[in-house]
Amino acid sequence: METYKDSLDFLTPLVNNSISNSLPSSNTTVCQFPHVTLSFAQTLDGYISHTSKTPIKISSPPSFIMTHTLRSLHDGILVGIETILSDDPRLTLRLNGILESSPSSVKSRPIILDSRLRFPLESKCLKEYKDGRGGKPWIFTTHVGEATGRIPVLEEAGIQVNVVDGDNEGKISISAMLKVLGNQNLKKLMVEGGSRIIHSFLTSKYNDLPLTNLVIITIAPTFLGDGVKVLSSGGKHSNLPRFTNVKYHQFGPDIVMAGNIAT
Image (cartoon, rainbow, N blue to C red; front, side, top):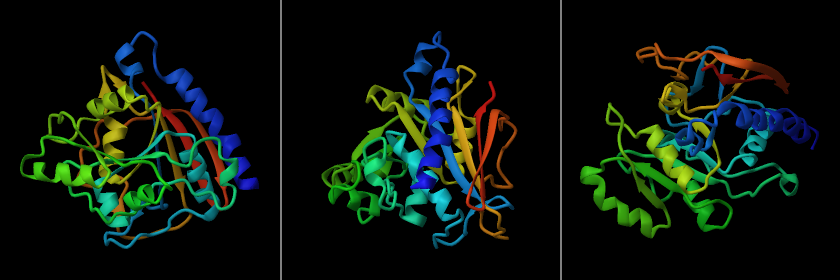
């Protein structure tokens, strides 16, 4: 309970201040987008997972509570399809016996970016929804081509499929996706990964304004040596941001850094 309260005391003002300060009232289009918090855990050498499909716990139990407390402050939790295929996350809120004290519903909406509609019907997040423990999954895809036939299959399984425009590289347009979420009255979005999603949300802009408002990074005091880097060595990283309003907090052995993307 003490870690949960500590998490709330640290996170609530961060999220509230970011909502108040990050979106200029003159830009009505951007104001229609949800507030976006990007959060992930990494090792000291910058890895977020193994290269295999074996899930790995990087952060400590206190950081786990912090992350799920952060989920409780948001309406939706977004990951990419590669995270679904490799980790099979539940994308629900689990606070180990203190769930009744959480400030919002347990049923935060799972949101998955899946340009080729590879979402497996046996995934845990869909099972959590069918068992009444999670929100209805929403999938975002782009011009689906041969995968069009999967749309009715997914919808019959209880998933909402949203087809949006692609960006200049043919990937799902982050701004188009956020606009749909805003029109659906989703106010606060938490983005968790994997590496391609992290890069997209660190660099995506609309009218020269960052689409990610708050970044929270958990740094575990350990090395992995090999695996998936938070940013791949072969990627284009020229547009990576700097942070302002940076704050640090320790949860167990982990250091959590929070900051806003500088405009």
